[in-house]
Length: 371
Image (cartoon, rainbow, N blue to C red; front, side, top):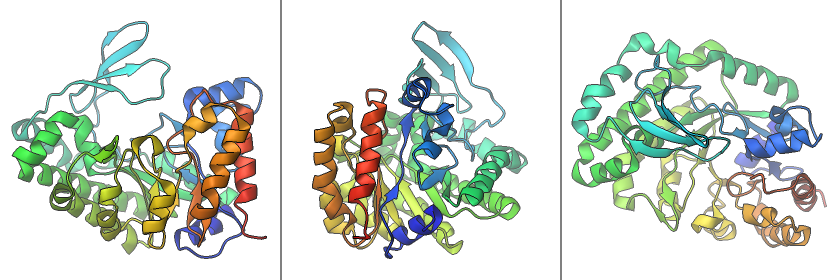
């Protein structure tokens, strides 16, 4: 069974030979393992481990999340404002000040924002997004074409990655301003979410018409943090759900399953995410309070699952602990189909190569349906 066949069937809860395999690696991790001689270049890590799923941003983080670029001023280069030995402070095309740690794979620190309210949005962001002359420049056709051709040759399941409404709004105006807006100016937030969704659909339509369809749509939208979502279920229903449903409906009209990536604790939102149209949830972050087996029991008949294996266990480099993590979760996760093996976020450089090799080999051994 090819990777493309396997993942297509897993997402439909159909019988397969084994569980699927996907992963995200810190760039430092891939660089370390490459320097140790396990593969020639960091970018070869996905092929080295035979991952079944690929996405346009790549599996090494940070990756290219701007294949569909919805930064307001698409022609603006990130402006270096300040630099130290350990960090770089840059202003992006949204006018946001972001401090990036050098040599780190995490997200940036949000320092300041040109947009703090509805007026800032109307003045600095919305006019750029409505400028149709920029639309072709917002799409990286080459990245998409190259991955699509490679996945066709290798018979891998290829996903086109896009960032959805909440994760487009939060780095543009900041989480604090956005969350205040949810309560104080909900029509502003709903309008932003709708425009981002409409424009994403417009650009994807242009991309697919020129280059052809992928096998699935990979959607990033971090909706939670530790032990709680960023918003109430009522706020999600009213302000974000319509934008999600619009995007997911577009994917389904093109017969594309939707994989939703959302970090944090988002369990209260899952019923509405299913209603909106997700086919698969990833990465099921243990340290935020998510529980793979609980979610499998509650929702496993309706959606497939990717992840949920505690990455911190791998960081111990104790193979007995890794074996226990797999043995305690895999039988339940793979029961009835619909599971793809991955850690619950991404593989840090504290994980030794031999540890991750064991995780994959033993996971696929335990994850076989043939016996």
